[in-house]
Length: 227
Image 1 (cartoon, rainbow, N blue to C red):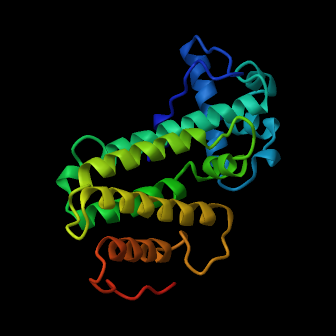
Image 2 (image 1 turned 45 degrees about the horizontal axis):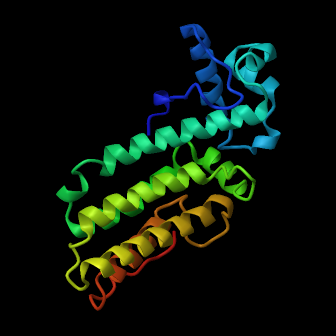
Image 3 (image 1 turned 30 degrees about the vertical axis):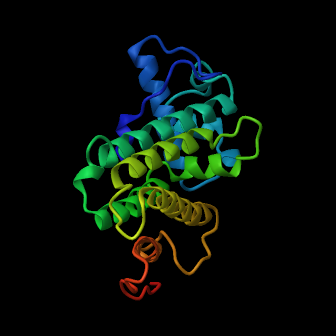
């Protein structure tokens, strides 16, 4: 995921118009700084003065681009989901899934989601997930992207698993996605489990479970050991 590809819509509530190129560069620098800082701290602990200092700007320059910190968070969230969508399209968009073998497509499902959840926007995803019960549901854009991923998989892989008919295959693929995302969401907010995204153990475990679920009776693909 290339964090330099930050893109922000101009219609985010509370994000003030940036008409000049320099103003847009400063706005995007604030967003890039926030994305990086949230990987090591919580949003409530993020101070505007620290952001301004990190960007080599004044506190006033922040408030000429963002109405308040909540508007800033909306901009961070929008930039994060745009980056995620670019990564999703690059890896499974178009005909890419159709060109993969079934097992390769299953492994890519795990790797894609794990890369998104552990990548540069991990902190923004964590903050969005922890706010999921708020009225505006900050996780909603991520949920929309998840639905698009599953649509791609159901179309491309719906007939690739001979043990099941197409309807059952599509249902099982949806459950695989639910399983993978559930484990990664848990890891996002709880880092005390035996299997973790800090090493390859959680990926290996998820790949084994998903493969065996889509190929019942084939036997385990290898014992999974935590690092």
